[in-house]
Amino acid sequence: MSQIVEGILLVNKPSKMTSHDVVDELRKITSIRKIGHTGTLDPFAEGLLVCLIGRKATKLSESLRQHDKEYIATIKFGQETDTYDLEGKVVEDKGQEQDIEVKAEQLEEILKTFQGDILQEPPMFSAKKVKGQKLYDLARKGISIKREKAPVTIHETEILNVKEGQYPEVKLRVACGSGTYIRSLAHDIGKQLGVGAHLIKLERTKVGDFELDNAVKLAELDLNTVGQQILMID
Image (tube, rainbow, N blue to C red; front, side, top):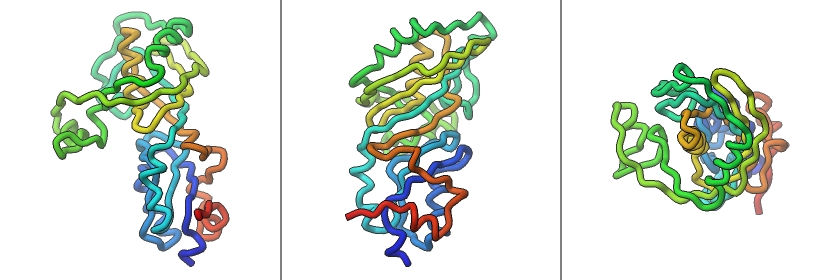
């Protein structure tokens, strides 16, 4: 049975579920313990999770993690949070102090400054380790430390929609290299505009050549459908 379901499985991860939760569900369905994925999605995020089922597939983890990715991100302007997303505590609220206006032309110019190879500071609420400690463990204790900026690559950004209001919202398509924090990108764009911002929705649509359109919803999976959806590897 395990030979039938070993390979790559494209899962459409729902919001409010961790990537590890998805792996646990797949272990229950397949009875295979050796299961991994090619890059964590935050619990509030949804979309493509490339899962690796079986020993042979999990050996591909490191190479597949380096693949480029693409996201649809919705950014709310006027508020900063400590996590850089909607799950955090609001630490600055410009929307209570002034009228917030986000013009597409102005945003286009700012997005140009984030094109190509850039340096990006990871959020405090992230799994990145500094001196052996995960940043989010420190953040949960109320400790904030200086983080070294890391090189990342943003290939392309596209404004899909601008929603006006007290706290304007902008939907972006972002194509980027591995290791890019879309939360940090949202935070930094808000800083550039001088009004603050945080991420309120994130959907991963591509990982390398794998696309969300070909992914299956977790609720639709059982042992039979896993066998039908699996991408076999040489």
